[in-house]
Length: 228
Image (cartoon, rainbow, N blue to C red; front, top):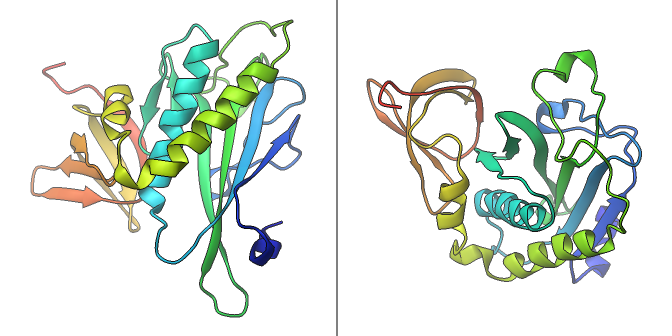
């Protein structure tokens, strides 16, 4: 579908019951068994210079958390930039991937993929200690309302996400503001305390030597500061 973006003027939504080759950041496997997760992708055409990857990813995290918390009795947090956290374990992930025009090599669209462990009970050994699910038993009721709310909430936020009107909510849900973290970016690892996440979705990190503004990277470790 991404190769047909010249014919697509509106966002498209793809929902799977399972994924046989699900993956996340750095092509890491994302366990996506049948009947136990939400596996959804939004294909969004990009027109002109209206695309902001940092805000789009952070908006998706907020929209996902809002929809999930409406239908599940959980309190989620967001680990910058794209992990949904429940009780200090990862319950969902978000990945944004660009699509370029093969002729002009210009950005033509973006795919936002979201994977959430709804009812998954058994995980591969390598992620048993870091992954969790929203519920320990599958709901018997129809999930149509949940899926509809999830999609509609994302699309409603998409209309205004460039205004960063959701960032205060993102900061409220953040699991890393005020925490000491290790961040991998630009082929190096730095340690510092997260001051905040700004209105462009960038991590503001205070190290012992400098104040860094990080637009892309990965937090690989979080530890409370002494004051916490």
